[in-house]
Length: 332
Image 1 (cartoon, one colour):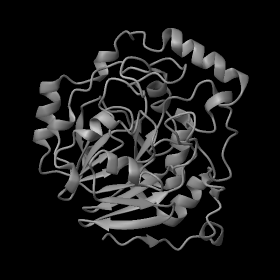
Image 2 (tube, helix red, strand yellow):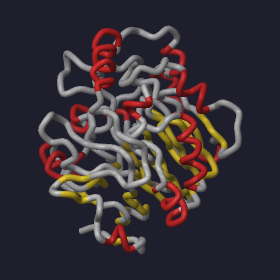
Image 3 (cartoon, one colour):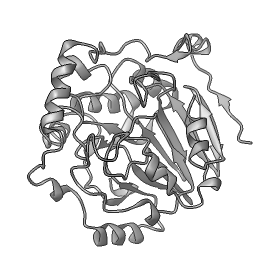
């Protein structure tokens, strides 16, 4: 049984203020959540009409399968990071191979014939990856992809580090080693420390289960590397607290897409500039942009997240990877 410990956090979090009437809520200090405004209907209509339209040049930021496999094999002995699209990373720390928010399917949807479709194919499939631990930030379809999770090799022996309320979903998929964490709780598996941290977001896989399971960001530390994985989040004051309590970080994986229009999504998705501010607050040396260029969930132009994130300015070193690309962490 994996031991779960509470971090020494300010008194307010010891009282679990994000637990409210059987549901969860984001921490204070974020933007207004405008998803229930009249503007949301316009966004949904626009995505229904054009959300799966092809994007000129989109394949240029995705490696072909042979190249992706070659880079993965070449980094076997290194601390390395492979981006597989959206918030899905294959992270090697020490001798551990960690998969975050697995999404390698064709659609981010409960339906395989409808809903947001990948604009570029996944160059690697789950069968190509040996996985020691899965980290799951929340249950949205572009993060918790059940068809991908169902095909993980030896899944009954793969530990899952996730948030409160998701145990039953993993059991249904055949997993047996599930650790649920609340914010500011930590555990250690095979020499790697995993700490669940707050995020500004929401959860749900249907119209009837809104916010009944928790969402989180994570600190992952092992092999001499400390990594922050944001999962999916807006920007707010809590990241300064996270940086003070758990920083600094060698690398932070931060979301840079799915932010427009701001009057709708500012409360739950950071803009590229806010992702940089998040990295500063976390005291991260290097940032890697994620949660963009994979499926179209909002209305900003396809390449805009990358261009704004990489625009000259102060702050941590920034990089955007190609889907399927593997980099040694030391070279990021």
